[in-house]
Amino acid sequence: MLNKGIMNRSLVAAVALLLLVSGLAVPALAHAQDEAQEIREMLEERDRQIKDILGDRDSFTQEQRDELMDLVNGVINFREMGQQALGPHWNDLSDTQRDQFVDVFSDIVRLQSLSDLEVYNSEVTYEGITVEGDSAYVNTNTIYQGTPTRVEYYMGKHNGEWLVHDIVLDDVSTVGGYERSFRRIINRRGFDALMNSLENRRERARQEAEEVAQ
Image 1 (spheres, rainbow, N blue to C red):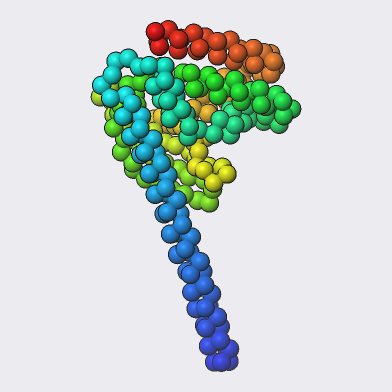
Image 2: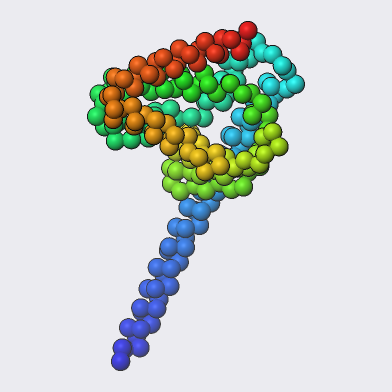
């Protein structure tokens, strides 16, 4: 049988360890809650600014469209989103190729983001925000054209700023859709063919954006 003194010391050590872990957990939990609140306030402010510009207007000046484009896309980490969309092929590219890809990819997303402005007038309900270290998950619901839609954001902290790297609409991942499309082209015809396809898509997106603006 263990000596009673040893048992007492073991009990004291266990309690001390528990208190230490609890003491560390409380600040960590408080920090995560603060980060979650920061993310919510950031997204709510962005939503408010977008709706202020949209108002009841049917037409917009080029300045207003540019401002909307910046607000809509300003929370996206295009480099991280592009890297995930390319999957393992990202590792095969030079720094120059990566920069060129991200440049074209981000232009396409930005230009297409204003194709349906009505979606940004939908009311958003925040169901929960979970933060773990430099990663965050935001679960929201919105009603668009009478249809309830779940919109989830996967975010990461980059240079002290929370940015989105994937958006999931009703269980359909934006990055996943790009990844499947990009993988097919690269596997069949190579990265240069993908870039040609993306550059053509960017040009079409520019023309469509110009037609909508007129």
